[in-house]
Amino acid sequence: MSRAFVKEDEGSAWEPPSQTCRYQVIWPESAEVVFQADDLLTVLRWMSDARRPELELRDRSGVLLACV
Image (cartoon, rainbow, N blue to C red; front, side):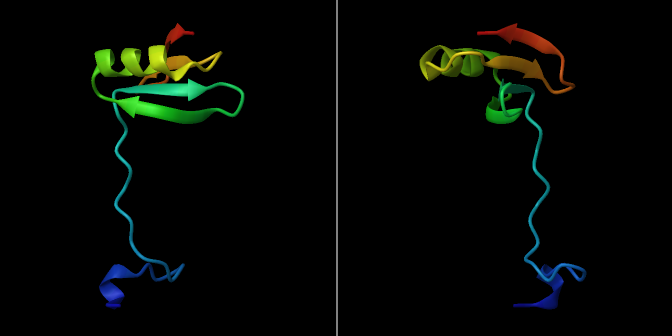
């Protein structure tokens, strides 16, 4: 593997930075992002199909928009 694709300090392959989507669905017990998208309707449809209790919908800056 070329050294151009290896981090000097860790010796692991380079990974592109993760893009933050406009909306995130979070499971509050673990603060884990379980779904994210830029389209609000897509997120709301996913939340209605998820059948998981206690999900939170937050925007990119972390503002709580809805709880299910």
